[in-house]
Structures are given as C-alpha cells and as structure tokens.
Length: 154
Picture 1 (cartoon, helix red, strand yellow):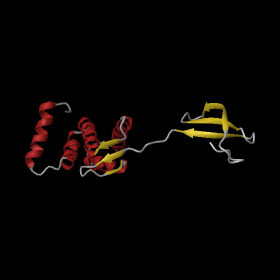
Picture 2: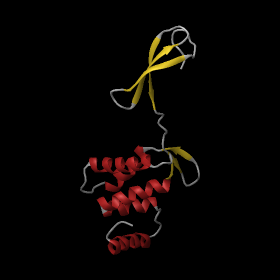
Picture 3: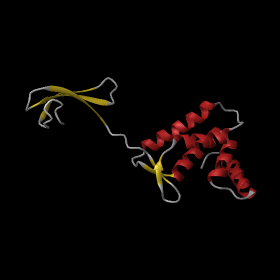
Picture 4: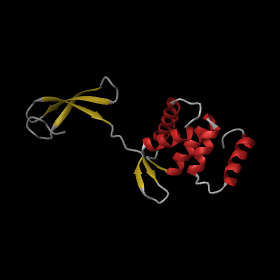
C-alpha cells in the first residue's frame, strides 16, 4: 500500500477489523518512512458471471434478458410481477453460488425451465418452445405429455 503523504510503499498494519457492513475490512496503517497513519478499506473483488453462448462467444450475465423471457412466458397467467422477479432471483443466486464464474446458456435456460415448471406449467411450455426452438406442433405435444407423465420436473 502506498502512503498518501509521502508516496512510499513501506508501511505496517496496526489494526484490522471488519467494517459495519461486514463486506469490507478496515485496516489502520502506519507509514514506516514518514510516520503518518492512515486507514484503508479492502473488499473482495466481485467476479462477474459470464455466459458462454451456443456459438462459443462469451458475454456478461444479463439479468434483464432472463427476466424478459420469464415475463413473456408468464404473460396473461395468474401471477404477479413479483413471481418473475423472485424466480430470476433464485436462478441468479444459484448461478452465482457455483464455483465457476462462467456458465453455459444451456445451464441458465435449464434452471429457468426447472423453476417455471414448478411455478406454472403453461408458462413452462411457452418458455421451452422458445428456448428449445420448437419447430413443429409435435414437439409441443411431446413436452405436454412429458409433464403429464412425469408430474414432477425432470
């Protein structure tokens, strides 16, 4: 750490304690060259979640995109706006808890589908039809039969 007074990087830590928010550490330091004391606040670097797309490109996880897809699937269904937000919160939280900070778009979509299937089967089929790119009515029928047969999410 560089002293803000003499600009030398020769200091020692006198005191360390967590800050009020418990997300940062407050360190009291003393410069060994000029004797001045100063305080630093350290926090852990937040690594952004990245999504690996089907084409291999990578981009930052965009919560708004996921939320827009869930809201479209839940449109005109008996759920309030908070349902979509809560679902996306759970998905995002699960993804952030993974040890890897890169996930595939398939992992994101599968988690959303899993949660939608528990929340609303019609919304689940709507989302699945876009996510899995259904091309024929038969694919809708197979998905609905899967819901009827399994009763529980895959």
